[in-house]
Image (cartoon, rainbow, N blue to C red; front, top):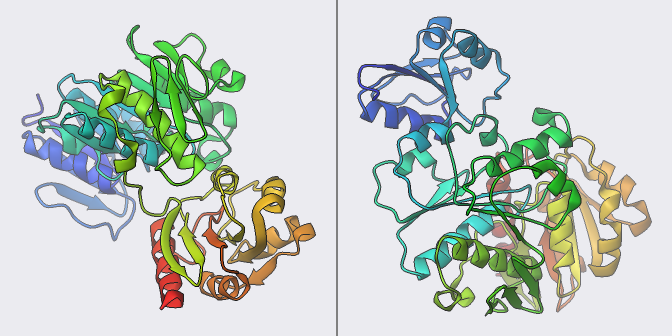
Length: 426
């Protein structure tokens, strides 16, 4: 299929490198290109860094676009104008995979946890599961594997050029303001998310909240409707997930938000053949940086929710609090952020609010009626939190901001918070 054909891969991040390695393994002549002159070279391909050569784009058999490269970028437009086959990494991998049941998960918040929980449930049910996509392992790395089911986290960036990627069960968990710097408007953002429903078979499941705005974006798309907060679908309340035909105890999962995630994941697992009797929510293992307990000292729990890089995610974390909290907000604010939307939840649950980092002043102004405390950095914020927290409290890092003022990414920020919290606990 690709032997002796030229494949050009735009973007040398993890997805692009996986696609380039896959194409090379199939005998293609591969050019891996990236604007970053310091990108890491990949063995077995031609590496062109610091810019793109027109000939690599217009003379290619296929141009594979990494998620970090917008579909509207000039190199993509040049390849399309030349009539070249242009596809995203997700769609490129899908062409080369055998047809097996596939669960696809997207949404603004919670998609990594739901992807992980769904894969764990299906593993409990005896399936050989690939779990990846936007979550860690690119779909290209599934090619050649022996799997019964694929569970794929899908981002809005990947859905700009989805190619032939299709799912048996597709879920849009939620939609809130995010990534507007790339998509421009919420309408465009929603349209990209709902592309998951386009290629569903008639008997496939289109899973979404019972929300008219989301329904409007997905009108006329494929699949049978399953609601994520009503029946037919799943309802989660008081530690029980109820489905059309049975229920599952999810009370062993800590936090109401993660109990909801577990219920949704159990629904998705059933959509590809698992039975409720095969599922045990008590065996689920959470992902790092998502409401992760990292230390406990003197009756105070330190919880790392560094993945909360937008306000909707922070709001969800606050709604699930079961004890008084000292809440750490800060980092690099996203365009248009209004931290005032958190006031009601903070008034209910927060003993104190600490604003830190680049957005600290903005947050303090928008939450002035709550008399927030100020800290210059995350390290200062942890020190202040430790001084005001009382036994029975939770120190919650749920920043509502990106991490780029101090850290490489949210994982780096979360690891640093855990280190600081554990030092306090010694």
